[in-house]
Structure formats: C-alpha cells, structure tokens
Amino acid sequence: MRRALLAMALGTAMFPASFALGEDAATHARLGLEAADRWPGYASLCNLDSRIRDVNSPRSESARNQPTGERGRGAAARHGRTSRPLPPVRVFDNLYFLGNRSVSAWLYGDERGYLLIDGLNNDEEARRFILGGMKTLGLDPEAIQGVLVTHAHGDHYGGADYVAEVLGVDIMMSQADWDLAAALGEHPRFGAPPEPGVVVRDGQTIRFGVSALDVHITPGHTPGTISPVFAVYDDGQPHSAMLWGGTGFNFGPNAEIFRDYAESAARMRELSREAGVDVFISNHARRDGSIEMMAALADRQPDEPHPFVTGEEGYSLFTVLEQCALAQAARLRGAVSE
Image 1 (cartoon, one colour):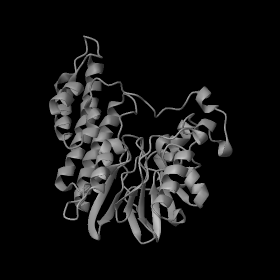
Image 2 (cartoon, one colour; image 1 turned 90 degrees about the vertical axis):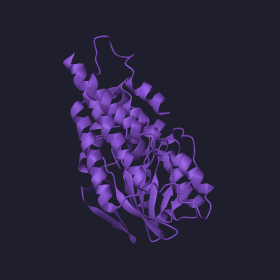
Image 3 (cartoon, one colour; image 1 turned 180 degrees about the vertical axis):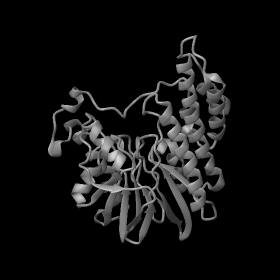
Image 4 (cartoon, one colour; image 1 turned 60 degrees about the vertical axis):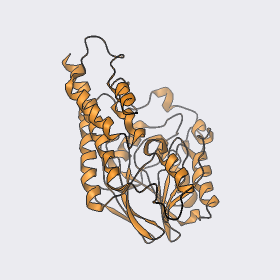
C-alpha cells in the first residue's frame, strides 16, 4: 500500500511543466506517508497533486441569503438529508460514538453527566444520530451538560444548537472559532452558526458530572481548533484518549497556516506523551479508522486487546500530520519561487 500512496502523493500531473515540487516537499511527503501505514485515512494529506480548497472564507451573498426556517437556520440545513448511518456504539465504559459515515460525534462521561463533543451536520442528524442514538443505547439525553464544538465548520456545529436548545445546555468553542463562525455566516447546507456562547481556553479543564476533559488549542485546520485529552476506561482499566480536532487542509494555499498546523501536531505529540495517551481518535470515522475499529470491537473476544488502544504505535499519527503539513508548505514555497 505504501508504494501506491507515495505515487498518489508525489505525482505532478496537475501542475504546469515549469512547476518543481522541490526536494523538501517530496521528502516531507515521503516521511508522512511512511507513518501513514498505521493511519491510512490521513494519507491523502500528503497528496501533492490535490487542489487546496478554502472553506474558511465568508460566504457569497447568495449563500448568506438562503430562505430561513426556525431560529434563522437554512431550510435545507434544518430538514436536509442525513449522511449514511452507523449504529451508535459504546466504545469505552465512558465514551460513545453517535455519528455517521460523514462525521463523528462523541459522547463522553456517564449518567452523572455527559459532555457531547460536536453536533454533526444539521438538526436532523443531531435528532437522529445523537439523541436517537443515546436512546438506542439506553442513555438519557437529559444527562448531557454541555456541547463542545471542536471547530467552527458546519459539519461539527450544524446540529449543536439543536441539542443545546432541546436540552437547555451551553455550546462551547474557542474564541478564535466563535469569531470564525460569525465571519463565515450562514451556509446553505449547515444553516446559521450557533449564537456566541461559552469560550474555552487552551489548558482549561472542563468538569461535568464526575468527569473532566483537558482543552488544547491546536491552530491549523481553523484558528482555534480544539484537540481534547481525557481519561477513558475499558471494563474499569484506565486509558488516555486524544481527539485530533481538525484534520483536512481546506484552509486555502497559505504556507504559514500549514506551518502552524505542523507546530500544533508536534506540540500535541508532546502533550499526549505527558498525558500517557494511548487512544487516538478524530471527528471523522473514515480518518481515524473508527468504522473498522468499531467492527473489530463488536467481534472482540474476552482475552483480546481493545482495538482503539494503539499505544506507542499510535504516535505515528503526529508524524503524518506534521510531515504532510510541512510537505504542503514546501509545495507552496516552490510554487511561489517558480
């Protein structure tokens, strides 16, 4: 698989003949892809052929002026189709997957108090996959004490305000991403962003029920992406989990932001080691392999290890994130020099 990934990432067919990738870009991409053997869902970040999109820009007037439903949300967003389903899963004693094949929502805690991490694409998905998924698992939605949105993109905040309003709880985001959400405005798919709520800060510990979660701000995917670290338990055995809060390189062709992204990955590597992290997840099930790991969890035998616990092997994730970001930064520098 590695050779195929390297070929995909290092190809130059989409660039003019005058463009040279440069040794730095190719070297960083090679290092990233070698580390991606364990994390194939992240390998596309090292694709030096891919077009770099920018979703972090204000929408056009036509997008801003979509017909609105309740609370000013776009009708298409409020009543839109849901993504392909995945069943709700108890992944650890105190961590539940409530997402779909497009995007993940994680429920953390126990019946004494839950924190919901992200709100999926829209109200209907939140109703169906989050509140409905909890009921399927026999969990009480009324025990949710807050919604932490990892970053200000609609596929993570789209249904957050629905959950917050139904349950009467707060939405939490970093200040940088509250600002970004306001700047982006209403989206025809996700609707309007939530009204400004609770601001969380780097290094803060959020406490709810008998649980706690440490907030780490990891700029890159957005200016204030949150990558939390928290304790999970497997039949009472403790582990430490890290959720990488924002993955894709869809912030436009900005070499400085790519370098910020790489620095965030390097910093989270060190913070994760300090916390003894041995579980590495994200908010997209195709990225972190959650789909396959949940299938393995369903077939797990009593004497088998937990499929989400990767230990030292999991730290290669940070190499993928760091090196792929550096590869894209070097690619942009090469384009400018030409």
